[in-house]
Amino acid sequence: MTNVSTPVFGARDPDARGYFGPYGGRFVPETLVAPVEELERAYLSVRQDPAFRDELARLLRDYVGRPTPLYEARRLTAGLAGARIVLKREDLAHTGAHKINNALGQALLAQRMGKRRIVAETGAGQHGVATATACALLGLECRVYMGVDDMARQSLNVFRMRVLGAEVIEVNAGSRTLKDAINEAMRDWVTNVTDTYYLLGSVLGPHPYPLMVRELQSVIGRETRAQCLDQFGRLPDVIVACVGGGSNAMGIFDAFVADRAVRLIGVEAGGRGIRSGEHAARFAGGSAGILQGTRSYVLQDADGNVELTHSISAGLDYAAVGPEHAWLRDQGRAEYTWIDDDAALAGFQRLAREEGILPALESSHAIAHTCRLAPTLGPDTILIVNLSGRGDKDVQSVQQMVGESAGTAR
Image 1: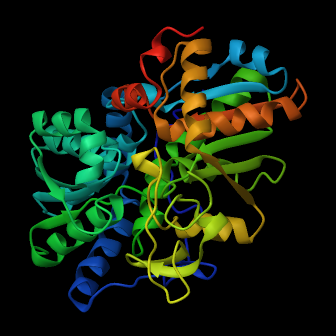
Image 2: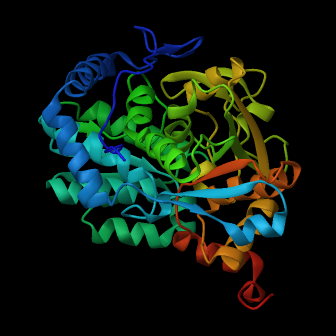
């Protein structure tokens, strides 16, 4: 098998203004226009640089541990009596999630740009850990903004970031979750543009971030495609991934967008139900709008005020979705559904008991939808789930929600 971890750039760019159809663009304050334009020039330059690509490929292989395997979940498949379920094991990447792919690439770019200070946001903490890891590796200063509610439910990842040398700044404003952490990180960037690089964690924000993050995560899809051909002799029939901002989903979808026979399914957070303030399912309850630098689907009221969100999963608890996801949905190329908190918890426990794998609560949404979908499909169907992260960070939260019985029930 060829080295599918080697980056491939420029396959599906947005237009010159950074739009995927009507979504995307660059909506930033005047003080950020020049820094964002500088970032775009730098990224479009380094992605053509063989030395940059080679260095990133080397780190993805030797440091991150790529390629991550495809694993056929035979007990889960047998219990559901439907499609063959195959897991793309991003939980086995260094730091425990797909976030390291993007963090390393952007940290290398920051180094090339002469930026020695990195700011980032995080919700579930995995992007923060990945950023702190990349900064420790490259000797860069790191500051991570995190909502206080997310810090409480992801205390293990807060400790990991601090051990890695990052300064973790608590955000008390607004909903005290990911949206507000992004706001504070962008304020920091505005104030310190000369020496600071903003390392955004998902396919969000002003152009070129949605393009850049998708390309840095596209290694997931390239590996999956090659591995599926190698192991099964054909492409998969269905790919399922959870969608917060949407980087793990865009990462695995990317290699299959041109293959119309492959169904691409994104799973959002249904929270406590599709009622205002109770969920984070943008396609179920949102509308087109602008949030934090980009035009996409946003949970907002009739006056354009951003609504509060809720999810059992900190990484999916966000009011907007990446603009390329909105475009793929409009084009009919990808479909999107939602899973509520209870079903996600059940998915977490089922994968643990039947496959010995603790999925992140984010990934548990994709597992839960797979448990509903697989029995409706034939046994020759190959269904790949992007297991975007491991669930160590969520064990204490799950214990609080389901009680000690979770550890003894059969």
